[in-house]
Image: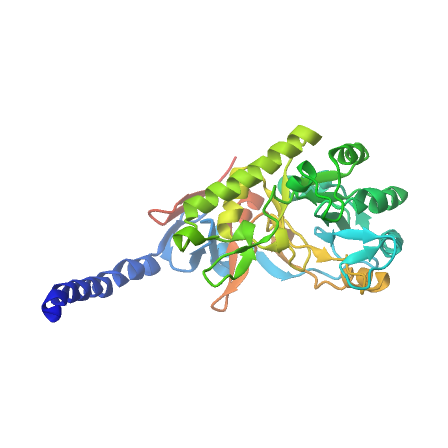
Amino acid sequence: MKLNLHKPQTRYILILLLLVVVFLPVPFRHKAMTKLSITGLDGVEFKTDAYALTADHKLMVDKDLAERILNARIGWEKEAPLPKGVYYKDHVAVLMYHHLAETPLTLYPGVLPAAQFDEQMQLLKQEGFHVITMKQYREFMLDRAPVPDNAVLLTFDDGYESFYKLAFPILQKYGYTAVNFIIVSDVDHPSKHQVPKLTWEQMREMKRAGMGFYNHTYNLHYYAVVDAEGGTRPAASSLLYIHDENRNELNEEYYRRVTGDLAHAERRLKEELGNTDSAIAFPYGSYNDKLLEICDSLGIRLKFNIGLGLSSRTTLNAPRINEGNRTLPPALSIQQLKQFEPPMILTVNGKKVLLTGTPPELRNGKVMVPLDALCSELGVAMHYDRSSAVLKLTPTP
């Protein structure tokens, strides 16, 4: 009887598997083989498969093809040697700190002695670095505004009171500004059982002096359970485990939870500090595509993680360099900023292209370049229909 009961189910499963095997490859093959129909500036029409789409549907084409259809000379190469004293340009080194202390705390390397922070700030000025404001950084990232060579943005996380008592006087001493990413619930509901955090009044005073305060979530800065075994992950970037229902959050539940938290933090920062702009530092540097989408939906365009490297316009989710480690001597911490690999630059007819999206990349031995950036630089109108894979280029007046 059991065999007879399961035979229909077995046949049904086999039929489904057969349909998957037979039919699924067809659209994938078709999509992979779809050629791009191009009309270049010279009016010549042809088809090619030397193209690719980025995750946000931007068109990348083979560099040789781009030269042909744009009738331009395109380069992707290392920047020429910089003048003495210039370590990088058209980039920003975003430095990250957390908590300062008056005396070294041997058990906590992430707590920086105030004197060590003072020496770092002195060396930045002495070695030719230029600390910029958040306004300058925003205009650089979003509006193509220039920044000084060796530009530095100073950032702090978690909203510790030591930012007011120790960092703020040192920053004022050197004429610097910095931003602090606040866990907003810690300010609204301070606890006697944690390291003291900033108050709204302290932040208002420092904001009048040029400091900035931004989103580090309202109350998602913790590790939460994500599976039945009790494993934990950062709460802002993970589907949490629901014990009562023996399952993880659905995407819709995740979106609702995280959107509500970040929106509440944004609202409180605006109410208390009058913020008219937004930025976020992801707790523990952890993020995913859903979290990036949520931030964009709330108008939070500037994002910060904890990856290593210089910040450029090619990504609004910027890396930060951890300078808040007391085991790193100040001279060595500054020396690290001088030794970043010179970035590759995209040029068109010998002129540098200011990239604001995906940079060129190597795919299957070919250099793929972002066509929208090149067209913008050359004043070429780009008419692209993704659904029909048709591209037409025309000169603009």
